Length: 137
Image 1 (cartoon, rainbow, N blue to C red):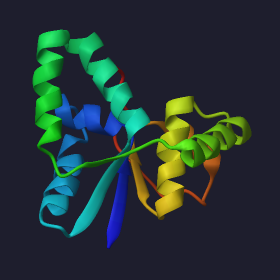
Image 2 (image 1 turned 90 degrees about the horizontal axis):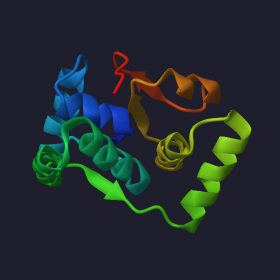
Image 3 (image 1 turned 180 degrees about the vertical axis):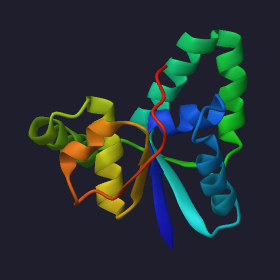
């Protein structure tokens, strides 16, 4: 089964209906139909919550969070092994810490990372990445 790992900006693009939202919508529709798996690291989910709160305020953020909880998106815990892998990726590739969790999850599960962040190019070909149009929060 195909597996996709979303980073924070991919989910924000979807929730805020920015360019690229249609691609994330298709992935989530296919996940609902069990044609593929859609995943996100708990660290990246926390980043989404923070960003929504900052961009839209508490009340709107809580509505969008409830919407996400209904999506066929599995949030994967950040255990000690994943934290160590993220730390290694950050040290080697100079990624942001949360980005290192997204990359680590994709590498661990052989997933395609869905993102708009060009920083993931630093990892090279070992990471499968599908880039969405860049979104600035």
